Structures are given as C-alpha cells and as structure tokens.
Image (cartoon, rainbow, N blue to C red):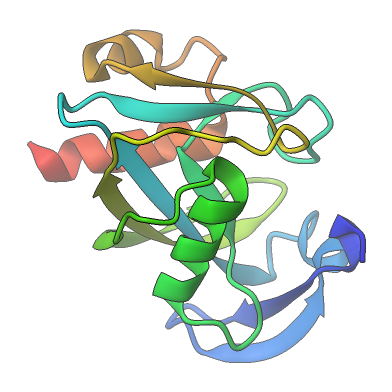
Length: 168
C-alpha cells in the first residue's frame, strides 16, 4: 500500500471517530480532521532530537520536524501508535512515552488532533532513511533562535511553541 492509500480515521473535535478515508483524500482537505501522535525525544541533558524530513515527503519536505510524528492507524491505541512510530522512524524500542498534552493543528493542507508524548533516550538512533534525511540533537535555545526562519515545519513550530508555553 502506498502512502496515499493509507487509511486514516476521520474524527470530530472531541476525537470521536466519524469515518475512515484514504490519506490521499484526508491530506489536502483541512475539513477532515485526523489523529496523530508526536513524541519529543530528549537526552538526559535536555537536548531535543529533531528529524529533517525527506525531500520526498508530501508535508514539509526538507524541513526540521518533531522527533517522531505519525498517524494513528484505524483501531490503534495512542500509546501503541507512539511506540510504533518511535520504532519505525528512529529504531527506538525501549523508551516509554509519557503524555504531555493534546492540541489541534490546522493549516491549508490538513487538520490534526495531536497527542504529544515525551521520553528521555540515550541509545543509538537508527533512523528510517526513506522518511528522514538527518537527525540531530538541538539545544532548546538554538531551536528558539531558529523559530520563524523557515527551517522548521509549521507543525513543529506549533509543537515547540505549545511545549515552551506549557513547560515554563
């Protein structure tokens, strides 16, 4: 199955499933909200791992983005989705994500109900080279200094702004 055929649950503002549609129909139609999980992966020093999205991605190609992000499969639990995405994208299997917050992200392309988790991880990163061009640990100050400079995805700028407001 290619990415456009991936099935996504369509949800209402309360997160209740109201239908299922192919990704190709959901992406490009911001009236069809779907669930995603993000995981902010930190090291023990508090640096945040970011991924540089592949230039082939349909959303934010070549931009720096959240450590882990992905769709919740139909019928899948949120923690299950977060753990699956960590393993698929970064090869991380031994890090228990903790829920931080939930928010809605919308732009001209899509609307997502985002469930953001975090974990602290010090092991090896074996990133998926078909989806990710590069990974790098960033100091939070460096991230703050690059907001608005068109190197981050709009999703990540929303994410990090939300994180910074909530973490003080």
